[in-house]
Figure 1 (cartoon, rainbow, N blue to C red):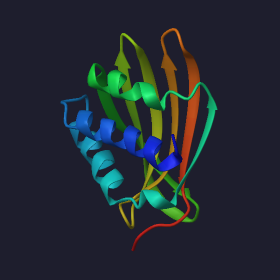
Figure 2 (cartoon, one colour):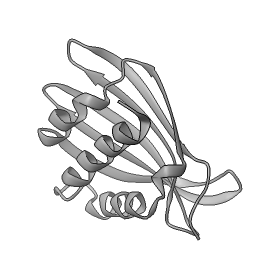
Figure 3 (spheres, rainbow, N blue to C red):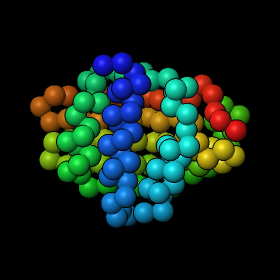
Length: 133
């Protein structure tokens, strides 16, 4: 499966679940909005360990979903808000740190760790190489 297909699979599944009530629904909504604004054709992805992208539909659809604001930080010269997003279910869990540009509202970077029961642990990094104005 190519990068675009895998990234879209992760994105679509997250967007479906992001509307679920969470510890901080406003943070989840900001993450969802940033993802929609982001030009994913410029995202670069690196996977280490188990590549759990194909497992996310089952994980996200049955998971408890939480989001929260962590801090402000500058990344690649851009002021950003940093968020944490977690999914927990019987089949596994993901824990992501997400940097969102305060200027464009787009996702700049995502660092996500996942653990799928019986399959393994993995890490997926997404970084934007360009942003829309």
